[in-house]
Each structure stands twice: as C-alpha cells, then as structure tokens.
Image 1 (cartoon, one colour):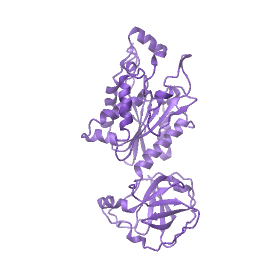
Image 2: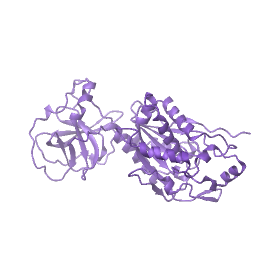
Image 3: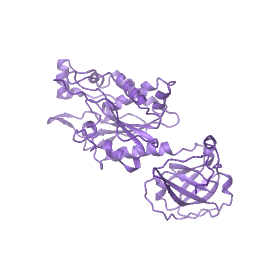
Image 4: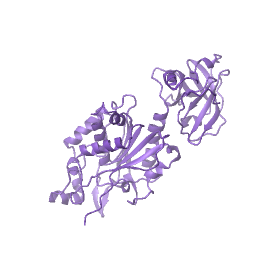
Length: 423
C-alpha cells in the first residue's frame, strides 16, 4: 500500500482582502509538510503559529500562505526534485496565485530557505516578464530557520545511512552535501544580489539556528545545521541561536518564544513600516523629533501654502508627495517612520506606532519648526490612522494627552478628487 501523497502547492491561511498590504509565505524543509512542519504536535489543524500570526490584530492586513513541495529523503518514501526545479515551481505557484503584486516575506525552515534563494535566482533571469519580475522586486525579506547555506551532513541520521547504503537516497540529499558546488554557487549569488535584487528597497535577512541536538526515536543525530552553515554571511546579519530548540522544533515555536516574537516584528518592520510608509529621499532635511524642552524659535510662516491642494488628482498627488512629507526620528536620530501632509490647514498623517510613546514632538518642515498635537484617531471599519495637527503659531513642544502605547496599523491615504475637507 502506497503512502498518502503530501499536499503540494500554495495554501491560503487567511481570507484574501483588497486592503492587504503584503503577503507572508512559509516554506518547509526536507521531508516537511506545509502544515505539520509548523505544528508542535505535527497535526493538520489551526493550533500553530501559521494561524496565530494570521490572527494577530496588528497583522490583520497581511495575507498568510504556506507552500508544500516534494522533498523526501528516500525514493522509498516519496519523490524529490532538484533544487533548481523546486525553486522554479515555487516561482510558478507564486505567479499563478498573483502574489508579488504586494510586498512579500518568506519564512523558511532548513531546505526551504535554499528553495527560496533558488526561486529568487531563477526569477531574476526574467527581468522582462512582469509577474516574475514583480515577485523578485517586491520581496522584502527572508527568515531562515536552521537553513544549511553551506550544506549539512545528513548522513549522520540512521535513515539516510541506510538509504545511502542501499542506493535509495533522493537527489535532494546529494545536493545538501556540505560545501557542494550547487550550494556554494547559490550562497555566492544570494550574498552578491540580496542588496541589488530590488534597487529601491533591499531584501532584509534574519537567521536563527538550533541550539540542541536532534533526537530521532531516542537516537541522537547531533546538531544538523551548525552555526557556520546557518550563517547566510550577509552584512549586519548575525545568526541568532535558539538554545531550547533542535532542528525539528525550531520551526514549531510557541507564542512567547524568541522565534515567534522575532518573526512577528520582522513582518511588522518589513511589511507594515516599509510598504505603507513612503520613505523620504535621502536629501531631505524634514524631521519629527521627540523633545522635552521648548523649541528655540517661533515660526509664523503661513503653512497653508506648503502642502499640495487636496483637490489634486491622484496622479498630481503622486507627483507632489515628496514636497508634502515629514520624517519621524527617535531621540538618537534614527529613522523610525514618516508621514505626509493631507490638508492645507496643517494636518498630517502617520501610521507608525512609535509616536504614541513620545511625550512631546515637533515638526521640522521646509526649514520651519512647528508644534504638533493630536487631532484625532480617524477610524473606519478597516483601519485606524493617527492624525496630528501642526500648530503654526506656537513653536513650543506640547505634551500629548492622548492614550499612548496603542498599536496603529494604517493605510496611507493620499490625494483624491474629493473636494470636501475631511477634518
């Protein structure tokens, strides 16, 4: 009797929405499954972090998917494919589901990280194919969970030893040999291209690796992916050890684990912040700075001449957007977000939650300083938006009296043909 075939292809975890601002795709590893790989009990139900993340309030406008593919270790168990073919299949499935029209993040375990890297390399060969090109250009980040960038000695596992002896190991095992030419080539390509695949927004990379030996049926097989192989060797990316996880359990985190919390923040930072908050050109000098002291000078310049007219058409709004923007900085002058003027009377909008924690703020806009106070939190059934108003007469820092520490996720509303003042 043949073993039931594992489901393959992309599976949607949560309902699609036209308001979604990005998508997250999980990709399992060797001998994995698109649901059970991520489940602590190897079950096919919703009690795992795939669904927990999809149900997080702050991630409600993110689409979640999981990808299944044939990656068995032995020909007796099932089929497998060359890494090149697995990458092309993932690219084709993403294209068929019309993913890539919004920003993308990939969460990968073990071999899955190599499949995603191969997918990116394959897709980069089609710069003139719009859908494939969109997938590559809109990839914002990749998380690697114990991915063997330089291979892994899987012959330590009893099953693989037997399969190798009998000549029944699949091609995937051969490709995962430590320092194989295939992996060296892929590793070099990713390191050279992860900052040039998307010229406007670089791909962010985060890596974790196991800290415990893996045991199969009470037999220790040791550390499957060691720290060196788990290191993608990307500048400013330091692989993070997970002391209480082995190669299998690292892909099955609980809600209070460092992997769950870290991946959640990675999604927020790279889909919510980067996709919904326009970034200012490097040459701009406009900032929002937290400050406890009174601002040194007053400004009486009429603000109404600065922002674009709200009667602009959509295209005119896009043309003028850079002239109406402000940048948000923290106390150390690190960029943490941005916003832009939406009304000629001095209102501006931001969807970055960090400003809720500031005691006082100011706006430097076109070399003039203004105080900023909360106007309201504009709500509709789909989004919450933080709106502030510039005080053009008094250049003093004003303490905020609104509730702080709120989570804000918002769509940036640009310009429209609506001639009615919103506020």
